[in-house]
Image (cartoon, rainbow, N blue to C red):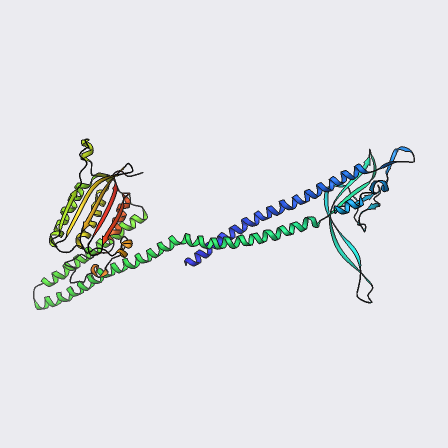
Amino acid sequence: MFQTTRRRLAIWYTAVTAVLLLVFASGVYLYFRNTLIERIDDTLNHVVEVVERSLVFEAVNSNQAQFHVNVEASFRDNTDSTEDDRIDLEWFSPTGKLLWSTLSEPLNIPIHPNPMGETVRVDRRDKEMGREGDGEMETVSPIVLRQVTQRVQVGREVLGYLRVSHPWFEVTKPSRQLIVDLAFGIGWMLLSVAASGWFLAGLAMQPVRESYQHLKQFTADASHELRSPIALIQTNVQVALNELEVTQAQGTNVEHYQQQLRIVERLTQRLGKLVNDLLFLARQDSGITAYEFSDCPIDALLMEVVEEQQLLAAEKNITLCLKLIESPQTETNPELLDDWFSLMGNWEQLVRLFTNLISNALRYTQQNGKVEVELMRVEITNRSLLQIKVKDNGIGIPSEALPRLFDRFYRVDPARSHVSENTFTKNTAGSGLGLAICRAIIENHQGVVQIESIFGKGTTVTVTLPIALET
């Protein structure tokens, strides 16, 4: 699917570029060709002006009112120069009869004045010796010329016509070479664009590919997480129903039946929590949820969370304490001292954030361990921040697992997260969404989170939140 989309994007890049290059090349070709034609026409008109100034006029029969052009005197010295310039001259009488020409053979082209220039095509017949015994053979070769025809007159009397011709291949030869060069350049350009388009399409598709892979993984993990408690619920319900029939038949107590229902209740609560977590993350991804932010005293919030987690800490004989690093003694503003650990945030989200972090620390800290929560205020680049650290001396996290800790449904050790039906009544199975939810809450508050851990020695989670949110 992604390769097909990538191929289509590359083809579209190449096709659009090809159209643009063809339009550009056509414009360059037309400009170049028209420029050549204009230069040739200018040259021909200049030759006409020079030849007109060199014409020798003579009176006819001593009549000063009538003149004619002395052809021998006028064109005697022009033959060699016109041949060297690849320009041919023809002089015609007022009646259109050819009187003088630099061409080896006359052109059968009717005379009509055209000082702006025109392109004409004529067929020249040449005689060649054929094979032995065949005699001479006549061949026809087309000739294309650019011509300017100028009427020469004195007053209203037309003395003749001067026609100047230039070979058309002076235009076609460089034009064809330009076409070859443009085609070669466009070909290389299209190959480059195709390769670049394929590369850029791959870069553009990479986030989509990653999102799709994450979605597939998310769907697979969610399906697995939902299937496990549902299967357990079905099993416990079936067992309870079967035992209820036996209990009713034997007239015994229903204590074991009640125990199965309690397990179903806990599994249902677990399933409901998982669905709520998925719904929370889905709303975060869609951006449709807008939370209300107000002034939150983080010290009071942490005291409340730590107090709630003391029961879990007491079960494992873990020391859980909160340490507040107070403001410097040089601070004298009482209002600022009262709000020293306050920030703009959402109370419910922040409670959920620190409850997840502290409960994780307690869960993976061994008996007689220690979990310490530290709160302090820091100033970085003229910005006030609150820094909360959750430290434990638990089992730690392997270094290779740190980059993926915030991935949804990721567990460092799946064996310790999934629990059996028998142990569910004593432990709460993690779904692998806790840290993903923590990161979403921290991002909502424009903060950052950092985890440092030494495997076998402990973990430190540092959350940095700004006092005021940037708009």
